[in-house]
Amino acid sequence: MSDARRAGLLFGTGAYVWWGLCPGFFLLLLPSGSLEILAHRIVWSAVFLLLILTVARRLGDLRRLAWRTWLQLLAASALVSANWGVYIYAATHGHVVDAALGYFINPLISVALGVLVFRERISRWQGAALVLAVGAVVLLTVSVGAPPYIAFALAVTFAFYGLVKKVVAADPRVGVAVETLLALPIAGGYLLTLELTGQGHFLTEGAGHAGLLLLAGPVTAIPLLLFAAAAQRLPMVTLGLLFYINPALQMAWGVLIGHEPMPVARWLGFGLIWLALALQAADALRRRGPRDGGADGGETGSAVRVAEPSPAREANSG
Image 1 (cartoon, rainbow, N blue to C red):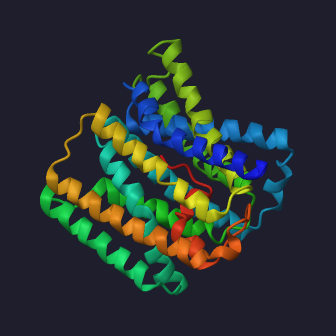
Image 2 (spheres, helix red, strand yellow; image 1 turned 135 degrees about the vertical axis):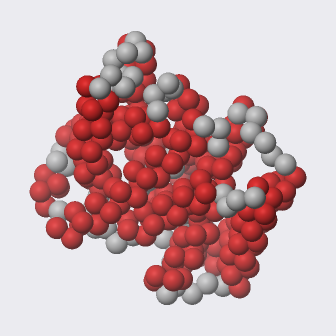
């Protein structure tokens, strides 16, 4: 194994383990509400990413972005903000397993969007995976008595975020920084309103709590940087398979630490999702072929898009 691939595996594993353990961090931010935590996450992520761009001497890239790119990043900003908000709510209200389900479903929704929007062709294995995913959602809906709204919201916003990012021509660091900057006026205004009306928690819960809210920026941005470093060193199929560390850890957190209920029907639903993902990953590896087996980077056509959850290229998985 080359040094580049070994480093890529370390960076990629670090990013996904970090994201998988995020529920524990957001619980530390209580009693701040979900919207307040989201606003702090946006504000301090924007500040941290601006510092990163300054150090990397990429601030000039902001002036060179086309208007079309700004509009695309505005849509991406709305989608990723919604995704972050739903995830924070799930993490702080005992729905971490639902969040994990959303990120397990996400790659399958990305495949469906590829077919519907980009007219991509899928193999019989991929079609079988989609059928299994639909069956799992039906089973979970029947067993719970209602659709898994949190999982749906996370999977759909993340998948559409990836759809937008697929056509954005911008450096990942610049793109994510712009997304947070575009949301900054709303997030900052909301936090200012909370503090002026006495409903905020930034100044009332002590220096420790304020420090944790400030850390929401680095906690969001650092795994993005780890992921960017991994993406430069690993084949995208490998990076896509590493993605499942994230929802697996989230599910383990919800079941083992959060003690969230897991009746038999829920296990069966997750089992169908895992079987669908196994088919999808096996098909991606089969289509990748031996010709790319020794590569340290680069894409492999449609096999890449199947194995890799496309939003993970530049987004925070939670």
